[in-house]
Image 1 (cartoon, one colour):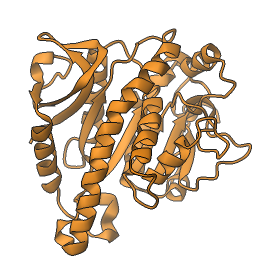
Image 2 (cartoon, rainbow, N blue to C red; image 1 turned 90 degrees about the vertical axis):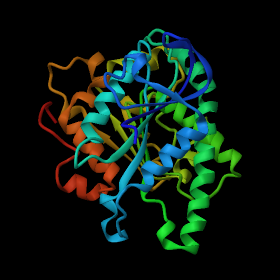
Image 3 (cartoon, rainbow, N blue to C red; image 1 turned 180 degrees about the vertical axis):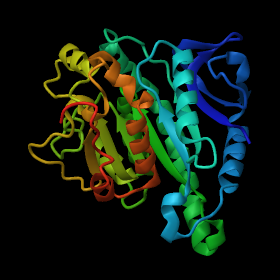
Image 4 (cartoon, rainbow, N blue to C red; image 1 turned 90 degrees about the horizontal axis):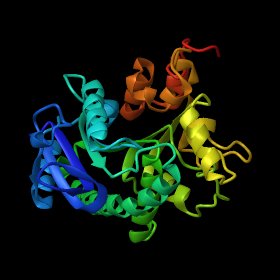
Length: 331
């Protein structure tokens, strides 16, 4: 089975991926480095689905008592970057850190979208991310249909149950893309309740409004969509994130960024499956405010926390074990 998986909505040429939105295309690879276009093989949508289903079926089944050991099919949605090579490099490292080896979580798929690629480009990037969200919504809607079919099959024959949890890790502006994609998918499926599409969603340095999960949110039902389609949502944030400080200042929305300020606390979120972790203590003073925005993917404590969250470890256990705090920065 392929080691690496990518769904992209970038334009494609003979020499690589472009910087504009194009049609959805599907790619697999067994060869690193992933920032070399020749190391990717394009496959059809049906071939991609067939390979992915076969890979998920190859996972070792576990009983409910050991659900934390269940393998994952996880989406990785990057944030703003300087081109597809940077996104591919980050995806490759993320796979090596959490999805490779005997203790790996399973398989990881990159959803690669053409970000504008600069802090000053954050405002147009927001509109661009909203456009690209339609493509991710298409993928999530098809995944939803497949999971519903698997659920029915498992009801008829327990041995037909899906062997993989579906999870997602989204970074920076990729969270806004995810937000709009989840809202669109939820609406297309008639706003289902009590049907989880995503088991664990980790929002890293999210460049979205920090009142997203409030009933009074300006984005209407977006927070309801995400919380209804997801078993648990974990937001990792840091007040030291200077990129999101710049983002808030440039946008003038009047609402703070979730990845910088954490969840809005007045009033408290009314979604009991949403929680946040202040990761400021993970990063030593030598890590600048601009670097912190992406430092989660280079920090051992942050990666360990993401790993435990994806495994499904209860939040109270993570807090009791001290996984949500470190000593690199004064508390």
